[in-house]
Image (cartoon, rainbow, N blue to C red; front, side, top):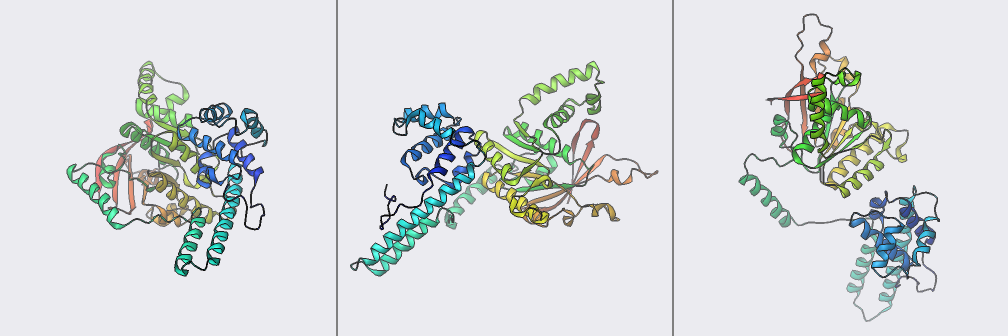
Length: 451
């Protein structure tokens, strides 16, 4: 190996225990493998056999196969490398090297650090050798030195420049497609005609915030969006439901699709007709590509890793999160809620850009709404951090006027819920009216949009 010895004959930086620990952790559970791949590559391992093992693991991951001793043994055997890495006994030894898979990412960071130090030593040695070569031109020596150092830092500093001429080609192709298909939506259809008209569908790489006070129906709205988008676009919708169990959300979907009173489902007072409607609805729902994760406590890194894994295994159309303030930040900002929420909102925006899909996050509003003469929510009502508004591409609020007049004797209930689009980075804002069918847990489009 070219970088195994420095010019002084010293053994270069390495962490064989971290390498064994990482490989063993992945064999115990491959859940962290997507994040590990972001940090290291096979050539970052010091031992050749560990490079071969990690290469085989990557091949399994890229072909959607699980990574365990059996599959890894088969892959190494097919590549004629099983014997050179120490055979099945060495793979078994790796699994016994660590008791748990929980620190895989930390092991990857140790390996990456050692590999970076080795590359830096090699680059430094090459620069010294070139400087001693008096026949070399100083400009060429400096240029090569800069190149070598940039290659070392490239692992952590990535800057993918693109010429505007290349971007123009893509832009023109997109404009031409829209011109040929006038009225076609560029984004993911939501199933609500008036909302699709306003936003042209949910766009790739955007963070959409749906804010509301309690009792406005934001979970019902998210549930409707998930079902509609999955049914219409035929892409998987990943629904993180941290406030309600997946079974509860599914039960509400059944009520909405079947048109059956959700309360009668809960208390068991279903008629034979209701039960028949539910049976028909189950067939429709069963084919709907929705993925649930109802983990109640999660931080932004855990959510990001789960989303990446889902995007690897399925064709994701969108991610829905109920709701943003239930997500924790990392330990870095523990105790500072504003900083935590800032980290979460920026993490969600980054995730949307990375996976190139819309991320729709519900958000709780501050109590200031209820203390005003006009309780319609505004952007400053987003709770805990102004970064939510800053990071979002679209911010919209659910507002149900009926809620604020329930005790008024002369008030006639309308069942209208207003969707107030207060921020739209790429287009118009405005108001959309829905009919709220609370009995069946669904919003119905009125095709009534106000600018």
